[in-house]
Image (cartoon, rainbow, N blue to C red; front, side, top):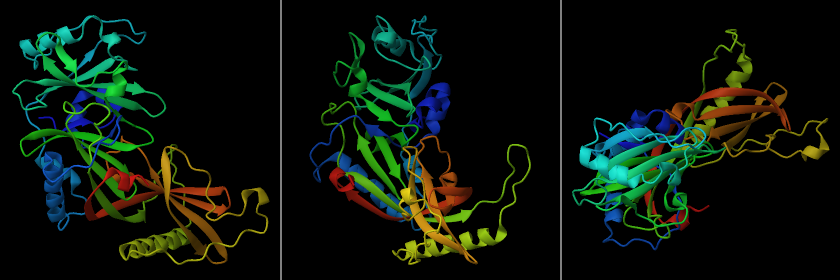
Length: 383
């Protein structure tokens, strides 16, 4: 049973069994097509998920994975082949994995000629394959997953239709195969994909997430080319968060680093107030800390006092923390990673004593509560 296609590129190609545990999405390399109508099966499928999530959220804080699990595809055949070495030299193909029927294997051998390296680039030489009927014609089609790597730890997903002459043929024709598929950003994005079956049709369900929002789209990769493959509309899930300070833990030398209990208590109170304000749809009204007398003018004395950002995380909450006559700037940081196995460890609190002067990075235990599910257009979520 294959419920997931990609959790992240690196994990996919080192351990293909983990693919079946992954849930949802990525960002397709494509442009938006015109908005769907009420007769569109993809829209009806999104409406079904919306209804089920609306019911489930009355009992669960974060029900998306369970709802998608209900619709996981069955009967796919998953395997990995090492097709060439680290230098790009082709390796012998085979032997046939025992779970792959001989007929499918012969189709795959046709597809991989003349050399697999001419079709794909993988940073580690491993290529993942999923044999699954994508268009309900009774024949198994092919999904290929390739770990491209790079600073973003990218993975590619490519779809191929079963063909009697060539084994499988590309659903999208392009001079560069990677332009005709879909991409997951493993570092610097929070994206996953799942294979789901809704109303008798198989979809690639994609989740592209930021703090406070999951954006879910459904795709039929054999039906649309790269110019029209970005399905619209999308299902937008909105969340409220509760953060608490995680317990102190030992460092690498097994020596605990004691924390200031008075400061911890002040931070904990602010985190509670922040959660309550967000539940009421409000901001914290606390005034910013006064600028230190010895602050560097080049820092601009800007509030909050945090450093510059980075593509691997996003600053999501800012508030002051006051202890006696001291005032600190606190920033909650949400890490963008498709490797995350639990949302509880999504975030940290960075504490600053002056502009640009970070004095602590404190781990948080985080929970989120789904509170709204809307069907929206892609353009509505662009900002």
